[in-house]
Structure formats: C-alpha cells, structure tokens
Length: 248
Length: 279
Image 1 (cartoon, rainbow over the protein chains, first blue to last red):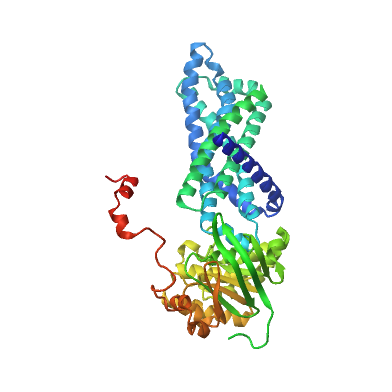
Image 2: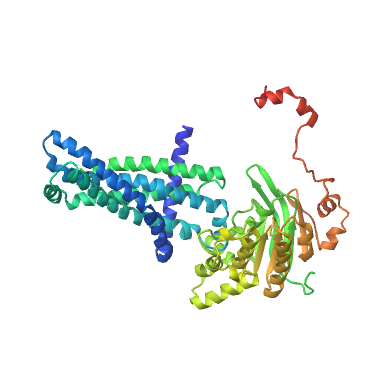
C-alpha cells in the first residue's frame, strides 16, 4: 500500500505539473526564440542517431521480411509489410525510445543541474517563472520535434528496406513501390502521426518533470535521468498498445 | 555610518519563527534594514542566514511573525504581487547562479528581456554599462563555463543590478575569492550602494570584509539576533559569544564540535564498532 500510495501520489504530481506547464505554454509560445532553439536541441541533435537507426532497422526488415514472405511465396508484399510496420509501429515506438535515451536524458539532466546550481531559484528571484522560461519551451520543442523525427526515421527505414530487399534479396523494385503505394493509406500515416504526438508528449513531459523535481545533488540528477529513460520507455509501450487497439 | 537623516526601514522582520521539518531555524527573529544602508547579517554556518534570504524573497514563508519588504507583507502577497515585489529586488547568489546556456551578455540582459521591451541598441548600451561597472565589459562574449568563480560572481552582480533594484541582497559574496577579487567586490558593494542609492543586505561570515563596509550589523545565533550595532560597537562588545565570533576564536560559548558522545568512550566502545559492521 505504501508503494502504491507513493506511485499514485507521483501520478497526481505529474498531472498537476502538466496543468501548470500547459498554463505556462501560451506565454512561452508568444516568444518563439526559446522553443525553436529547443526543437534544434532535442530534434536536430537527435538526427544522426535517428537516421542511422532508421536505416539499420529498414535494412533488417529488408532481410527478415524477404525471408519470411518468401516462405508464403509473397515476396512482392515486402513494400507493404515494411511500410505498414514502420509507419504504424516501429517508426513511432523506436523513435520514441531513442528520443527518451538521447533527448529525454539530456533534458532531465539539464533541468536537474539548473535546479542544483540555483539557476531556477535565481529565475524565481528575478520574478521569472521557470515553468514559462525553462520548462514550457522544452516541452513545446519536444512535442514538435518528435513527429518530425518519426517521419525521418520512417523515410530512412523504407529506404533501408528497399536497399536490402531490392538490391540484395532480389525483390522487384517496381512491385515494391507499387504495392506500397496501393496498400498504405493516409489513415496508416495518420496513426503514426497520432502516436508520435502522444509519445512526444509523454516522453518530454516525463523528462521535464523528472528534471524539475530532481534532488539538487549529483545523485539526484543521476536518478532523475535514469527514471526518465525507464518511465518513458514503459509508457511508450503501454500507450502504443492502447493506441494500436484504438486504431483497429 | 548610519545615514544622519532618520530613514525608513525598507526591510522589517518581526518575531519570525521558522522550522525546516522538525529542526527549528528561527525562534523570534527581529531585524530591520534602513533605506540606503549596507546591513550585514553575520553568524556561524548553519544559523539560517540563507534561510533568511529565502524568507525575504518569498521563496518560503515564516511559521509565525511578519516579514515586510519595501512596505509589502511578503507572507500575504499573492503570486503576482510577489513577482512585482521581486522586480524591485536584486539578489547575488553565492555561486553566481548564471544561466549556463547563455553567454555573459545574455545573462545580464536576461531580466531586461523578460520584463521590459527595450530596443536592442538601448538594451546593448544598458548591459555594457553594467558590465563595465563590474569590470567585465570585455568578457561579454564568454560563456559562464569560461569564467573563474570571482568573474562569475561579478557577472551575477551586473545581472542583479541591471533592473536598478531598490534592495540588493548578497548571499556570501566573499566566499572562495582571491584577495584581489575580494577587495574589488568589497569596494564594489559600497560603491554601488552609494552611487545607485541601493539598500544592501550582505549575508556573510567574513567578519573583517563585511565589517569594513557595513553601516549596521546583526549577529545571528540560536535562531535569533544575539547582537546588533555598528562594527565598532560589535567589536567593543563584552558578550563572550560576540567576541568569539568577531575574533574568530575556537574557544567560547559557540561550540566548534557537533554534539557527540564522549570521545574516549566511543573509541573504546565495541558495541559502536559492531553497529558499524566492523569486527
């Protein structure tokens, strides 16, 4: 009961924190500079790892799906299979997991260190609300960056599948693209976009919450960073299940 | 020197009680700061000097008693009123607390950008003027990580005065400074106070430095102000606790050691060793 009570209290604390951040968002949106810089920090700086992983995941699918589909004699469905898997599941989920590891930890430790070095207190004393000046721009930046990263992951993934499926496994290029074009619809893209928005929201919220509430010590900041990765990863998988069920 | 014309108190703390959890920090603290003066708040470590600053800036609220700053009751102010009050105050943090993602110029410009919409050329002149006042105009492009501790504190001081505050609070401004920086900061506090008409509160335990510029001093111990007066008055005090603190002596009523059981008995006590898992 003690652990359950603490967990419930923490969920409540996150909910209240979210309301406070949302209340600070309009004022933060009115100053584009900080949140545009955060799109760069969380998005552009995650680009290399997202592109690389997208490419490799696509290449793996090129190999694995070709092999699996060949057993049913339907190698021509490689484009559809890869396209759907990437757009609906792998793209949003893997990007979110990478985002939590790359951008989430960086956000949590940055805000945690700002707390530990009195920067947040200094802002309060200067009559500046840290939720508006520090948290909200990072929150907005993260939510905008995630769908963009997912789109780039998907593109790299499809490219990787095509690269291996067509050039190595011998799937016909025309069939690959035409099947994908015929079978993958806008609703599939929509599902991926909704998931990426939800995951971006969840991952960024957890990262800024953990950073903002980190104990002002080296250990506290370390713990906040670890919790960010763990909680974000579990949440992404749970939300993915719920959203997949909702989109069926 | 206390200003010859009786001036009003810009800060008044009356009968303040405050506990951090079960630990009492203040037990009936009284303190007043006159307009235009430099008031020193001295005391050994752990006497709640930093807590006092947090009370003055409304970061925490007293359990009992009142805290008035610039005529406002800090405890009853709503959030908006508290923020309005803070705009009239400046604070220098012990470690500077510069924003690490902004360079020196932007750190000093930060409060202005937040609270005023100045044309860029005017803002630039204002920031350079404040940086010149602390001798760091040439460091405007540096990042906080490239500054020494003393330089960081001077930048923080420029930031604290950029909005022309009425009250300026210094939290341990002399800790960890080399003699040159120390002398510079000491003179700077006096100069800023006199030139800009600021009222200053300096929290410190560096007795000679703060004593040399303070118009009036309070000595905190045991949750209250145990002595107050001008520096010569405190130096002439016959109170053993005041004498011990002013002279920096380890002998006196203020114990250097944290309360502990008898030393010899503890060394010989096997039970104590076993409790710590030593065999």
